[in-house]
Image 1 (tube, rainbow, N blue to C red):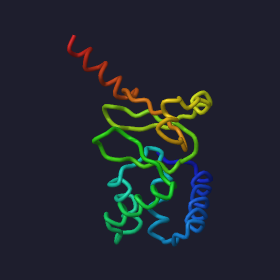
Image 2 (cartoon, rainbow, N blue to C red):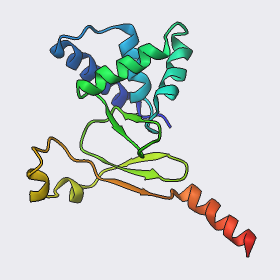
Image 3 (cartoon, rainbow, N blue to C red):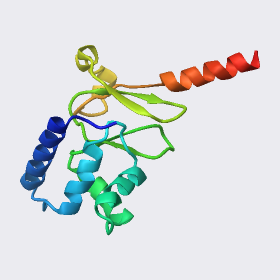
Length: 157
């Protein structure tokens, strides 16, 4: 699923400015790798980013994509999410939002919630360190997988 073009352009502009402020060179490869993540709403993994960028830049290497994504993650320009022991998925929307991740197919969906944004940090967490940001992640079956599960159970009955 693609995002809206105005949102994408705003992210690209903020991205370029953030690279410059960090003293990191703005390269065509970095722009295209970030663009691939930013234009996606399904939180792509490294291989998906690589395939998308290769359509526009056939000479880009998988190693370049990995290194660039790690760099952008370290600069706070991307975030990761997903289930442990599965492929890491990247998110170019670093604004306050939350996720629903399907435990069956792995799809991830963004949602916004003022209620979650207003949660107080528990004392037990404060004792571990300072919280820079918070993201609530729900895990369960997406509607598509739930419907499939329902059809399987109906067929068995």
